[in-house]
Length: 116
Image (cartoon, rainbow, N blue to C red; front, side, top):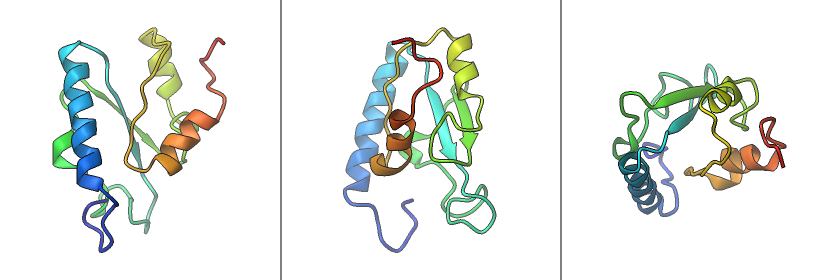
């Protein structure tokens, strides 16, 4: 997202905040699950394209799950629900660079694992 002609509004600031949150989670031994959007062949965010790599400040580390998705919601067509269930996760903190897109789609849909 940072290699495009029109940079994201306050993108670097947002990424640094996310990087800080990731460090606090790692320090507290909180599991981290990454969701990575693949727009498909020809899309600017297609796997392997210039828009695909993570920003260097928020690169996944060894042992952090990375879930690839093709839809806005992190749960649609992925194994994210299964990973959360297996890890007995009942609460999430969601962050992202485009809140109005994928983050919103993930939280706006009924979560299949939510109990109330």
